[in-house]
Image (cartoon, rainbow, N blue to C red; front, top):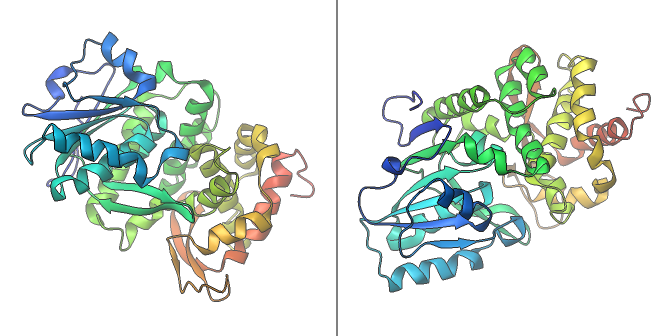
Length: 352
């Protein structure tokens, strides 16, 4: 099914059960895919170009050096500017492939075929491509939207339970951004991820990105949960998956909003979200380990080499029943909410 998107939106969006060869490029194309889904791709009788690249890519390989061999291979084929790159995999793979497409021949077309909940609900759409640096996540990248995104929910059946749970947090994020407390409670509950949830998340993101494609204003709200989440993910040495860290960031954002005087979220919702995140408690870094990563956050302003003094971060504050707000706050504002999160995950609501 083709999803309705705003007129002039640069990406055609399809959400369906199984992949369809007719949605692949009609002209010359190359493929970069995650080796974990190669057999599923072939089982669906999907074609591969002679220059297909299949390899394992996780957060530890989200580096510029990972894409250099791809670029060199394409130049030897050679691929020309009329070629289209097809990226098949999770959020790390689509981020890297989109970046490679933006660099090759100064930019070729590409398609995103996300295969995880996280990449279907968020990373595969919007044109943000990127790679990490040792000093922080996604500090290298380009805005280069795919010409087509095809989310095939049948791929989700092959996901490990931890990956599926990780991606679910991006759906919680969308519900919080919309201020839809009932949907947030549903997504944070039990049961499998529903295709209708993915469709709703993509429709919302397409509207926001269309109004602010370069993230000068409104689009920043899509970073809800990612400010603290990226710091948690990095400080854990990527022992925590991206969605897991975002879940920690979402819970902390709810508590930060409360500490900033906004209406608190119902305890029933906070407890439900904390229960889903509780297995992560032993892996949470210390606040002292998080602080350097927060001060280097790409959403920060007034950054100084000497440390966190003078730094302000654009924080997204969710509100139950209302849309989220943006507010500039120092990194230290996250200290108390993060401490409360740790107590909640450890089953200590009195201290939280």
